[in-house]
Image (cartoon, rainbow, N blue to C red; front, side, top):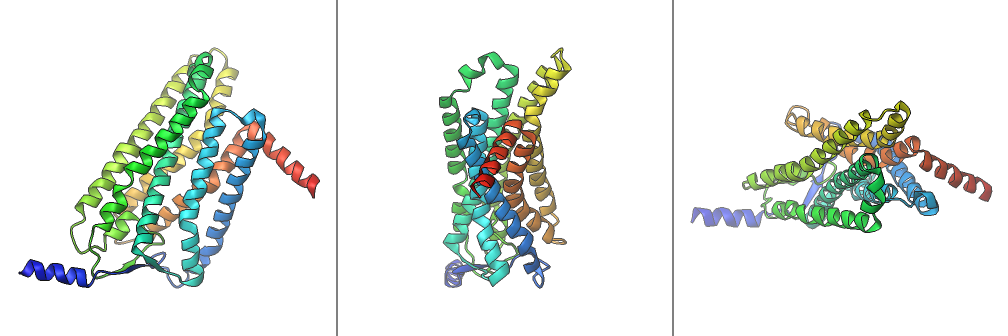
Length: 319
């Protein structure tokens, strides 16, 4: 009888929406963060669209490596667009309310895009491994069919593996608090408000991180160990330098991407005493890489720099 009464109370007080409070501890002046965040978002959209235009227009860039870079640009724009309009609405118009279905949908898309970005990094690492360690077999192995199959596999893997995250979160009962001390619907932030046990949510989040992100990182690490081993065997220092130069931009982005994830995981344990840090890092991790990725590639890649120069030159002429 007591259990029936408890279940009745939980159903009676089930919340209909969440309130995204923004950045914890700085609610009174958090609107000042809207300018740098809006500029980062605008930069991410502009830079990635420009990358896609350059890759499409330049025949010399119709290669597997640049196809993966194009997919990464699409993923980056999708990730930034999933969170930034809502964050800016919170900071500019105090539009903090978000319905439960919308919140769970945002949770799914964020997880899907983040894991997809990790998967594309794996594809790019494998591409570089084959190009450097097995150059004569590269055209036969990394064909258009291989590129399409790898991309589709990553898309299916990530879209299916992340479905349980919002599904499990939606099965929780939210019967009392509905204020989320965050700018977006993070899994742990949302489920921390539930009135029932959320152990399964935490377990699956951890399992997802170790199986997908962990295996991706292991494959990337293995690829670059083999690349380094192959490069060190080269007799020419110039050839070794040229081989490694094609990987530097990729390594910079990978180090930033996974380092921030590790830092977020570590700082999340200190969220009770300093909750702003993991929230701020979480937001920045979803907006800085989309803005940083195309810039790093454009600066470090000669072909992209040449394409960018031609595109800007055409724009100048047209004006």
